Image (cartoon, rainbow over all chains, first blue to last red):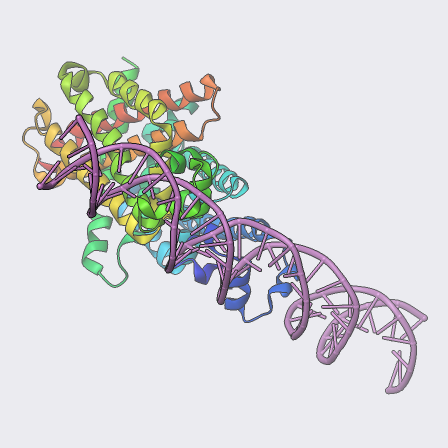
Length: 193
Length: 193
DNA sequence: TGTACATCAGTGAACGCGCGTTCACTGATGTAC
DNA sequence: TGTACATCAGTGAACGCGCGTTCACTGATGTAC
């Protein structure tokens, strides 16, 4: 699994061959079958491992409710740190979300959906979101998740070691999340006249 | 190019071989070289063709300013129609945006950036956005483009012939765009106290 | 504590296959005079 | 209007290569008695 992830910096998982993985791992091709029956099984294991990183991130964001609730900046900071610390995991998720095999695509998609639902539950504890119906909360959470995903994509795309472009990505994310957060009360006011 | 696009329903461009393309086109493998020097050149030609569809969409949205300016529903309708009419073009863009070769990824990314800038220019003509600075407008346009992209992704993901799920995607898009639109004045009010 | 056996990750040779690319070719269509 | 030549898309044989997968194997580690 480590070998596969380390190959992702250069290419997408779908275009990595079984032999490339074993070569990277310093092992003979047939040894692969001691661990997985094919590349798809490896891919699904990587989905699980990768979303483990994401869940850990969410757990941390939750453990500091003050920061989570009040400072967009704090949340973006946690996001950025996790993307750096688990770069290949996030690269894998972003690359295979649409490019992967059907099984891997579905696995990633359902993890994101789960993640979005959990965020909706968290959001329902916000004072000014308390009275929203589930549907509106889901939509709102989806909007935030979209912005988070494109921020992750932005961070991964920025050439490594160009802090100025990355700072730009971060600044954009913070302002977009602020726009969304400010839109929420206006939306609620408009839909319950 | 038609043959390549027709293969995209099943797999991503990166994992399509030169021989598969010629087989689909009903032609001998070597005939490929009469048109492109390699698969990457084909891919770049497809980027151009695909974004042609997208530009046509923008042109139509612009030609009916009333609808463009006032009804989010109208804009989403145009978007949905274009995705259906050019399904393989959009599939190609979504799949290769992260999964493709470096050259193709860059080409797609810069087209999206261009698209976002043009939207920012259009937005500056809105009465209540007239006084925004370029930076805020770009950020705002980015947010809208993100939402459009994830709506496109949603439409492409929905199994064909399940109108109820598609309607759900459309409804979510409309409400998210509304949240964003309502957030704009609040954002401006907050940043110019 | 020692012996016998099972489990397990990795080995190395071999297979048939689809791949990208080369080459010299064919025959239809377009262009110059 | 007729002839000579150029351009062009497509052909078909051939190449060397990396691929996924099979098979019988080795040798280290763990477990039962």
